[in-house]
Image (cartoon, rainbow, N blue to C red; front, top):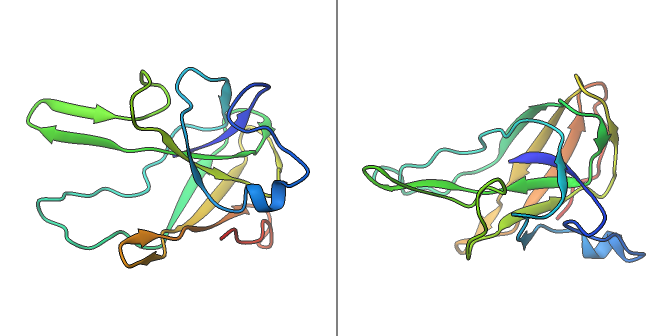
Length: 150
């Protein structure tokens, strides 16, 4: 997962209906489309399906911002080891596949600077095996920023 800024023709055009259109994450194919990464990717969860039966829960994901830019949202993806020596990734840096990335739009588009720290509070809020994502962005300098998105 990483925070991103999107460009013209990129991931999401903002409209007057932004508050309801971007109130929840959605699948987006980003491979080959313009976006600017604002930090290195960060690991949200590590699962071993041979050992774990429980769905991951609430987590904090810290990011060290490495490029100046407007925070438009976060891209999430998975990388999997299917068997010994066989891997699959739907990361935006990989060639496009039938899998997309999960895009978490930021309702408040903060201007971020390199060196700044932010934290994504991420909760899959799983009900009947379906994730009903809740997330919140927290800037390191203050404690009351983006309202939760549901």
